[in-house]
Amino acid sequence: MPKLGLIFPRFRYPSGDYPLGLALLGAVVRRELSWQVALCDTTFDPRLGHVAEFLDRERPDVVGIGLSTLMLGEALQVARLAADRGIPVVAGGPHATTEPEELLRHPAISAAVIGEGERPLLALLPMLAEGRAAPVPGAWVKGRDGTVWPATGRDPWPDLDDLPLPAWDLVDMPTYLSAWGQLDSVRPGLRGVNVSGARGCPFSCTFCQPVLDAMFGKKLRQRSPRSLVEEIGALKDRYDIEGFWFTDDTFTTNRHWVEGFCDTLEDSGLRLLWGCTTRANLIKPELLRRMHSVGLRKLGIGLESATQRVREGIYGKGVSAEAVAQTVTHAHEIGVQTLLFLMLGAPDESRREMIATIEAATRLPASEASFSLFVPIPGTDVHRQMVAAGYDLSRDVTDYDYYARQPFTGAVDRRELRMLQRWAYLRFYSHPLRWRSLARTAGSRAGMRSLGRKLRRIAPGSGGGA
Ligand code: B12
Image (cartoon, rainbow, N blue to C red; front, top):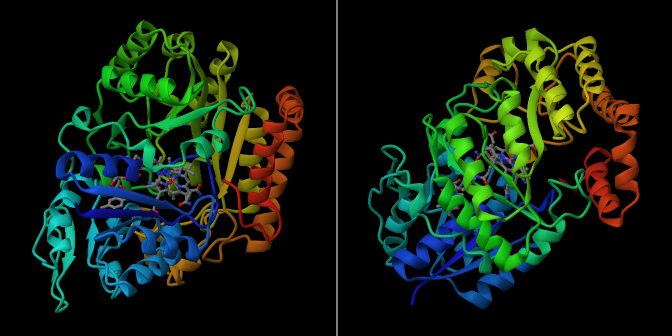
């Protein structure tokens, strides 16, 4: 029986978020092609030697690598290890979606899949295993003589309910469960896992689109509440989870669907705690109350910047600061914690504007805040706009570090920007509004572990923790 070797080359910023996309691909390949599948995940053992051992032990017929832009450098090294052993390599994930041509220029890579990988992979595997090359919907393919067939478009999976359960047996789930931290502020050390309920995003934030569009399309496609609750039930049976977090970009886009999900979850009797991310203008207090009644305890909300000029003029967010303040306050009153997403360092953002964002976030009764440094991801609208405005973004993307360094010089220099980021965390978490939850975190070993991971991200010379 032929074998697929999947590789998740996450060498930096380990986190408790398991490679859900790869686990799904593994399950689909097993079900549809009856191939064997093995998975090498470098998250908790980030060494090239670990990958080489995997390749020599498993001897896969084809290797599939999933990569975001942050993983590009290591992914190319991993591809070379496979090619040195004569194994054809197919790349997929966000970076393959936005830069397929660039990836195919690399001698070790034979195909790059655009967006959803399930259908293209099923078509590619038998072909690559036989050493053939031909056009495949949803993939860029390179022949042995260097001929390249571009993808004619995406080839999405038509019915999300028809996907098998992710192949959890391929992943080190016990380690992921203990490293998972999405609901740590609710209860430190809570055992949980991520789930995905939908694909597609109808919104147009310039720091994200059209990358998400290219991956999953503009139209929102949702799983039925029943299929989702079955997956959550299976996770409870197998791993005794206490909670879960939705990776969906905007969980409450469709209110009726959310109500249906809440009913189905309630009927299941599972009684788990959970969280999700949404836009502040898409969740009214009645819906929040209903979600809270079936276990919602945390909501991720993007404010990005408190100033209209940056939030709307540069990021095109389409959500007012007032809507964010209202939703955070309502959630607080109802008993749902909020995690605010903010960015510092837009191209010409001034120190004063950044301080306004830090102060606005600090005043809100949110339990957590994530102050990222703004980084223009290749393929996004804001990246294009910056290039048109004359910014030099030619820097090698393998040198990008989304947490600790900007690849361009903005109105505030890099050193000061990092200082502002550290000050933002200090200011936010030292405010009396956060004292209670800080005390809870400090009082437990799991809480301190999770705090340590977050602090490593902003510490001088940092390299780990997500
Ligand atoms: C959950 C999540 C995370 C988790 C980690 C998830 C993980 N296990 O890697 C956390 C919170 C840690 C995270 C961190 C970051 N993330 Co993130 N994240 C997401 C999110 C919201 C959901 C991912 C997911 O589970 N999707 C559902 C599964 C089913 O899809 P999937 O994994 O993409 O897999 C499908 C395809 O990509 C493809 N595929 C994937 N691998 C492979 C492999 C092969 C061989 C093939 C053929 C196909 C294929 O097929 C899969 C099934 O259809 C996405 C947005 C989104 N809606 O997808 C952003 C997203 C992936 N993240 C992004 C970014 C930028 C980041 C950060 C850099 C941001 C930051 N400053 O914090 C960091 C970097 C982390 C890192 N090491 O790379 C970008 C990536 C853009 C890019 N060009 O790389 C995305 C697309 C959001 C966006 N639009 O900006 N993230």
